[in-house]
Length: 305
Image (tube, rainbow, N blue to C red; front, side, top):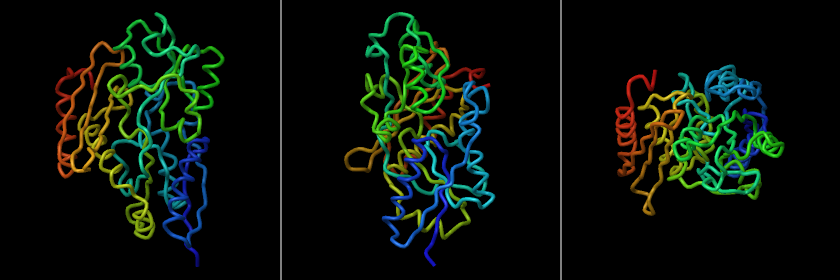
């Protein structure tokens, strides 16, 4: 019999593109393989009127899909790694990642101004505390207004004047072939991305050895190294969706040394700390955990309460 894999995914256009990227990679790696896509509606998709931090955090985009894995309704789940909780439920693992797309954020401005050229008091639409903190640290005069929804929804809201500008992930716009709507690419020293941003991860049951063997063929080791380091820093910080945290790991040209930049801040931008370290790839996880501990020590105890 031809082996068949059921791929669980959210139903947004971007999520479907990402799921199809995983399905395509699997079929190229395994010629005799059938793929079925199973759309799972998540709490994060249903709740659009409140910031994620108020209703349970980024796990709202994964918990129903993870339950489908536990219930054997799907064989694997495709996620944006920035939406994956730092600590996964027992019995599930991220077992493969595709090559990472551009991890940076981009600015979309109704009047095509850059971030620094936005007028005083301009309204920035975002529900990301990470973006909010870095924006307000750089431009305390800006006004942040809640902005949720998929890429198409946010573009519509911007066009209807609900905000003067918004921030999106470059990776999503590239995958949707909509990078042309961008006003400004924001370098990591301006807005540090979220841990895992730009990476597509595949989650599966750790006991499902057959599926794990199929997925091993599509794992991109360099992306895995970088994202694992970012998540190790996140784990040491023990940050929640209410905690503004940025992380970006990059390999040097030789692929033997990893550079990790980390950031933690207060949501209002009044306090922000950046740190950076490098290590051999074999030591990257330990280094990342140390960097997370260093950043945590810089913040007062009440910050993480």
